[in-house]
Image (cartoon, rainbow, N blue to C red; front, top):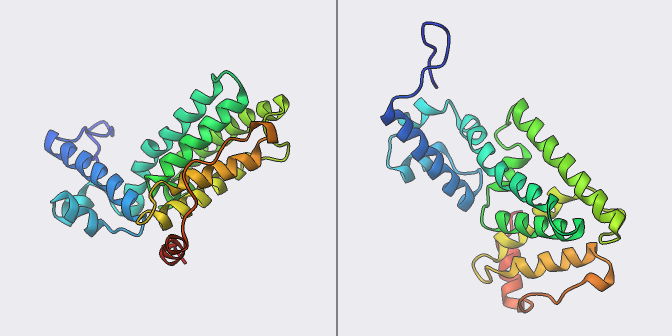
Length: 219
């Protein structure tokens, strides 16, 4: 934590301390992406090649570390939502956002947990989530007005979409790492009018891969 100076303002970290903080954040992002938020500060310290005391000097606990990562992870979804706003149509923008969100989640096991509030992010994180929710409400409303998406889709369905795709991505990672693309297409086709449906990418899983995925999926 940065201590206050004589005027009560936060002092900037020394160069070596800032390097350690950045290293810990980078390693934590990778470890949480691979293992989810079940990874410990000891795991992160080991992967970073520093003592766990160094981690605790920069972050009081895992909640503080997760909160520091929130902004970076959240920025990916905000960027996707802003890009969707300037797509040729709201329907195209919505599909691009959902594909991007699915891809981000497929490659980052900790993403949904962080965005959902793992580590109990504070008021600023809550405001950011509400801001993204309103961006999606506007995008979905415009897509519905175009007739390019079903009328009963809600912005609150998007986190559940990410949860479903994440479960597929995690469960099939070892046998069919791109299987999430097929199931993303299946879900998106369920949102679109029949004329807008596209062929499913990739073949269906064989039974062995299905059973492997079901065994690896979180309980």
